[in-house]
Amino acid sequence: MTEPIDPTTTLRGLRASIDNIDAALTYMLAERFRCTKQVGELKARHGMPASDPSREERQIARLKSLAADADLDPEFAEKWFNFVVAEVIRHHTAAADGATS
Image 1 (cartoon, rainbow, N blue to C red):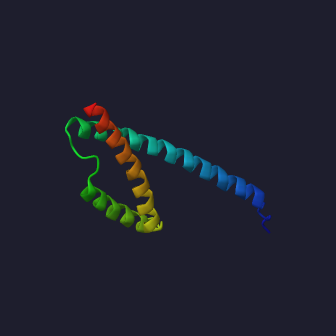
Image 2: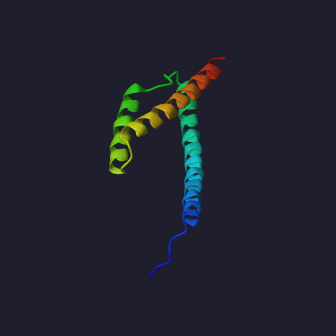
Image 3: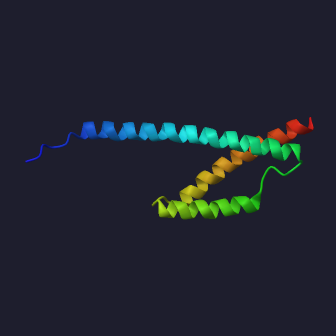
């Protein structure tokens, strides 16, 4: 006979996993923004537009496919991407404004 599992212990373990995942996501997002900052600086130096709608469309399609493969709602993946891209474009626009000042 197996002993019953304590739900409080299970909950603590799941929350610890969630905390670790949140930390990893934060660091990965910070690395992503370090890369996009370099892209923004490059675009600003060369007078390129802050956004690239055709690339964004390709990325959305790619991420939605990855999300479906990962059993994640593809619409959520698109919302997440759009949120991140809006922030990236804001940074790129600021970099371009700084390059022309």
